[in-house]
Amino acid sequence: MKNVQNGILAKENSMARYLSFSIVSEQDVAAGLNDLISFIDSDITVVGVGLSLVDVLGGDVPELRTFPAQTSKGYEIPSTPAALWCWLRGTDRGELFHRSRKIESLLSAGFVLNDVIDASSYDSNRDLSGYEDGTENPVDSEAEQVAIIGNNGAGLDGGSFVAVQQWLHDFEMLDDMTSDKKDDVIGRHIKDNEEFDEAPESAHVKRAAQESFDPEAFMLRRSMPWVEGVDAGLVFVSFATSFKPFEMVLDRMLGKEDSIVDALFTFTKPITGAYYWCPPTKDGKLDLSKLGL
Image (cartoon, rainbow, N blue to C red; front, side, top):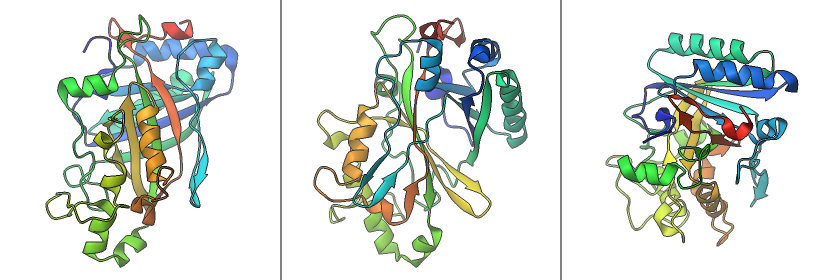
């Protein structure tokens, strides 16, 4: 699709590195971003812009906002906004490392690197819980329709909004669960990935069934497992034409509709949360015209 950061819609890679930056020198932000524009290949690096960066540059990106922190039924959903987010895609951990160093260097005058998360695929697109992730993801033209902004004019068409959360799993809790209990939490049988009608209403697939909302809450999910030391979980990444689909699903997971909380919270919890606007491209380069660049 024209003017899209190609990595959003491209086939999944086996490895990823996620970088988030905050601003340390407002006067040097524009220069760093211009250097980044010259360097970035959107096939392998997807860039997201946070609201704080838009504000500093006096830009205008309708619907971009800060991820809302919230508490529901005793569950905490944290907000950890950043000015800039980069999703590095690849197949070689060393190459990802050196690419991230180059990006950090290009931005160093105006930005500081806040966080780095390394991720990789597990057993043919499974979450580390053992269950397949991203089942029923839209593909091809449906993925474009769900994830890519259109009919909003130059500087916006071809862009996307992305919600990013790092989820931390409790593997001791998972180890203590029977296979049937795990299936009830997810709402699918781990052996064949099939949904089953007798799953409880708290099962994740019933809480998060995107087609069950009005309007339907479809997103293009591009999540990957992460591991750091003895901790691990999932980096949840979902692209859409607005944040509304993600917010609808999260609200239901938290039981805001019917007081039924998603059983997923039995063994995992989000430890970060951020929203970004992924700008379109123009002539193969990031188009930051909405930021005045």
